[in-house]
Length: 551
Image (cartoon, rainbow, N blue to C red):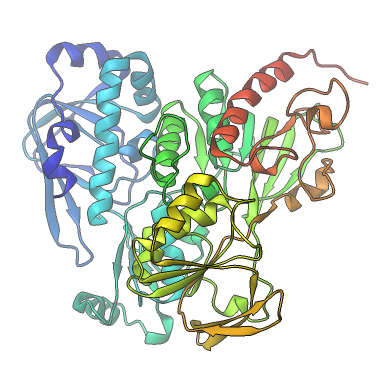
């Protein structure tokens, strides 16, 4: 059943008069005539609106612009969802059914409500999250992707939106009639597919993630003159933890990430060894909670916005730091936290790029599982991420061939995962082997060739999807202009690794810190990353409290 049927009371709670009185100081009174538009999908709304008198209707539009009722709100109900927490475009349409009086609460004041009124704020926050989940179920208010399911651009865009918790609809012209209707309506040639229709009416052809994000209002322009207390580069567990703790303690925080919140942890199908979740939790669910928590405390999360370089300006941080973005924008911060993690390592075969995005994957989410449901797949890797992916895929596909270079998984994978893998009849471990060749055409993989590292004997396996979990290299190339000290493997050196008594987690640059997987000597676990994210906030406070000295 849809979440709106199972959790309606939590999605649409009615505030009592005394509760409304408690939050009146956070908003202002507004009036609207019957039929007035209170919010429109694709446009920024004025914030959350508590209905005082009258009633309003909330609707969603599908790809053919047909209207569907979501809810009708009367006195005591409030209008809004997560988009209103961060001043982003509305995902729904709202009209006044009668003359209306509302208490209008703007985003910054809504965050104040959630913090100041803990119990009431919890009910409101839960409703905002559940409403977003409901919209995700239907794709309401998001862009419409028109293209074939196996197209690499469709897979990339769908994955990008899904990883960022943003609703979307996908229409395959081979299976959905209305996709053909829309192609004809917009006079789109087959060669131009896929296309994306944004809620505001814009049509994009083969857009980049950044182009799509700007079209739907996920990210906006940054103020180049604003100086944040801390800029966090990377929105994985470490970066999000920094955002939550720093923002909750009153620091102004900007978080930048090139793809999505959650990092590699967000792509984990199930994390079973994270404290407090004895039955396990999906990486996406855990990281989405952290992302919403950071927004609750007022952190500015700019995703996707990729940092091109860190400019130290020759003053070792005395005048703050400038970050140059790939988009051409710049932003400033008194301190910088490097939480950029690592980039996935690629297989060393000549034609790998021909299959990436369509047949070769670096994470195993429901999107990839749907593409290869019922098929045999190959997965390369022997770490915990590989084990989690193998277990998840085994529940979705006919068979998983787990290809590893070692003689066993014992040296690199947690025991609980090894035991789980050995208990699954449709996972076969191929030891002491490496993939040496990919076969296929037009972006579609047909088979892999693998070589025994001991005998040199080669084998061939017919599969259409290959998953690579072969580790990652530190994402530090953007630090070259600032000359932050790295170790021999490219990881950022900090604290005692630089000199006795050097401030914990601080790099060779004063006011620049490194945490998580990108830091030399870090423990590659989600809990460790979260711990460092909390710990670095104390280091930031200490740095900001230091007296300013000049030469």
